[in-house]
Length: 590
Image 1 (tube, rainbow, N blue to C red):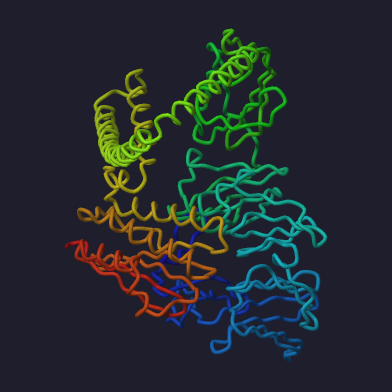
Image 2 (cartoon, rainbow, N blue to C red):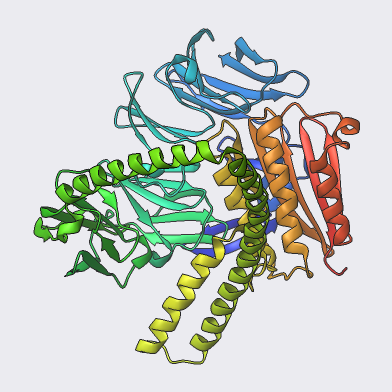
């Protein structure tokens, strides 16, 4: 995020520090220099004799079929502007009043333009500059934030924050999202390698697209980044950059689909126990099952409970895969469900009829009895209402006490099992059991939401808190029209927050994100982290309508955020400028 590296043969030859904010890097082949485009003009650099310029205007140099150059740039005062030149003379301009240009693509006499704050793609005639058509939700294209476009194999491949779209003949032929295997719908980059295989960089890892199937290059394969920004190929190697550095993979031979998984299935009573076997990438293993003619369902545990099935014969079928393989389908298995006579349909029907008759008789007797003792019944009902309210309060207190006690017990189980595992030898039966206890307790522990999460032994680590906020933001904004971004994911070192900070930070920014999705009318939200001289700064900035600070101060949400910051000797600043910006500032030494 703050350095430029020059690499050859997988060796770093040189590097320089780039302090300015930057958005894009581009090699200028005319003068053999490198341009870094950012939000303001920066100083000039050199890396081993190669000039490096930080340029305030976004600029894209595109060569047309007849060798004329199209240059798009940014007009600071009026927004985006694209200028077309022919034989050195300007032939037309396209201006955008409110938005800046993000990307421009030239293909078969057409310009495909992506703008910063406008969804979808605008298509222009490259020779005349006239608008041909618009691709967004108003014209049947469910495109929101487009990040990159490729033209390959007579198709158009569009990466966006809603997944991957494949367009052929001006129509969407296919779409891939998390439901089809993507790690995240937010795609940062796409790249076709020399073997005609598509690599996909997402905000949660790397996917590989081959033969209309999405595969996963997960952490067990050596790729450690959880936020991947760019992918490219050079000298038979794939280079993948992300928040954990750069991962290099040999790509001399094409990616091969290979299964590293098998499953063992055992029937025990009315249940099936399914144990997957995978030593290379076990976290990517997926198992599905189908009963009779039902649709396929995901199996999320190692035991499939079938007590709900009706009495009689049934068929079950399993299929499974890992991140690097296709689905393997087992042969169907027949089994019979036995229910005692009192659970069979005919007895249940009989029981319902008898019960209904008895209920009618009892109701009739009660009605007759109530007519004779109407006054007594009113008094009884009044007392019952009082008791009901008192009992409701008791239930509420018991529930709260149980919630607190359960959180403490789960935390104790997690900590003790973790300590025991450190004192035991690995690959033993006891070690595996202790590790399973630890995993199950941690899973329950995380489900207790913010309060229980704040008791976790790792919750005071800054990277854990920031990842928690990142995951919460992605889940919160995933089903909205707001695009959520994270800046400065790389934390320079492991930092433990002072006591009570993590809980307050979580509550402050969850409140801020919730207010944003409710009131801001924004299209983009950026979560930013910075540490300098032990001063921690976290901000949430949207490009929405903003608000009047004076009126906002009377809202409970802002008062709560400010009070929470005061509890840890910190402050929350609010600015309404090009949207709303909420900034937390705190001294880590306090």
